[in-house]
Image (cartoon, rainbow, N blue to C red; front, top):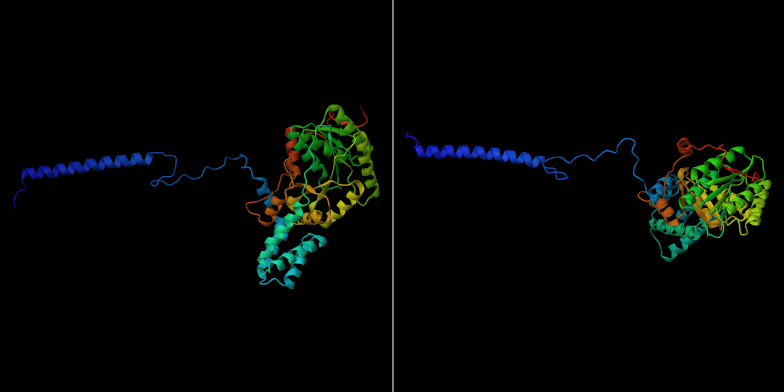
Length: 402
């Protein structure tokens, strides 16, 4: 075996040393790469998990449409999901399909008259298109519902600057009249207007206290009467005070006993007459508050109130917790009274202008587009402690005392 030449041995050793130095350098550089923070995920390191919301932090705000769809979940189950099941189960458009569709709409509180009008229009369109696909009827129904609702869409008037805007609010007990007054007052206050609320339901002491609390929550002034006093005198003093104080809006509460009581209706007529004497042209709006959970009975109430005082607009409440939201279609068809406002909860922000397009999208499409559940009375009452609000604070005007 021949000996390795010294020169070759030196070359081999030098190569080994160079390789070792190169390996050390590369390992150090890789650590440097791994430590670099480029603000995003790395191929070498797993992406950081999303940052959790801190305990106690408020959730991100939801859009009105998102809240609407959530609020109409029960109505969707009662109406639209049953429609989808019906159309999906049928293969042809025949008389049996029309019969089942009629039954479904009537039992969903749409109403007999509104149902027949919708079906007549849908039949005419189906015949014109020589329709064979039952699924196409869903699109036609959606279109006709939106058309019916849009034909009655109106907004509450805003103050014109020529004296106060007077809104008379009527409705039966339990419909959500007091909360609607409070939320309507808050809306005008947020718009920079001076608002005065008349606590005119003097038949119940509790009703006076409730409207006082809601007015204070809204930042509105109060004129209240003693329990058992004349509601018309409270309305008179409220408008007189509004004119002298330069108020922009007056919202008059009224008694809320059952609409079948003739003495109640006579009292409302008197209040309306007195408002007109104090301020010519008043009331500028008569808002009827209806509970959507009453279904078709809400339409009967509307007829009675309209016959007595001439209702100019409807506020439909409690849409966030009922399966009977289909009644709004019957209201639009049977009454020439626009639905102006909808209530989706008892929080200050839970009164919305009625937008037919949003309502139909939330009802038929759901999901991303929505209307939502709002706050509740317990939550608002808890906040009153922080606000320092009490019903018995002696800082509001009392009718007949100056």
